[in-house]
Length: 193
Image (cartoon, rainbow, N blue to C red; front, top):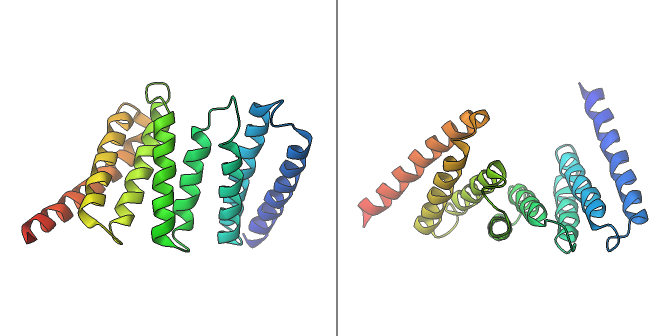
């Protein structure tokens, strides 16, 4: 098992090197779609590598890589904003929890403003789910009630879209459990008033 992890890590490191070399040969202004595809893949590779080594460094590399994609002209940038949010939320588990959760929330909101929920309902639902999670975790740090209410709304919005997609049954069950937990916390807060 250890050999497999080392081999996979070596593969990812090599893929990162190859993707960086590819970026040197592609002109972002001349071929923004291809450049964006390579940036996105590079960011994913950094996230993958963060699971086995240098977690914080590789998550930051992913964030910086995805940020470059937000400036591309002629490319749908919501995917880059979303993945900045995903990486920031992951980074919040390792440092600057509050600050990184707030930044993740901002990134998710930007992505949600750019996406059309009718054209990509599963991605929209995933963004709502992650927005809800970020507010839920932030409620442990500050502004308990407002963050719980926003989390509740985001989870409910996600469920509206996930309910129509059978492959997400387990996710929906998990969200219903979290919604029950949030409602219980909100009831307890209201009873204390």
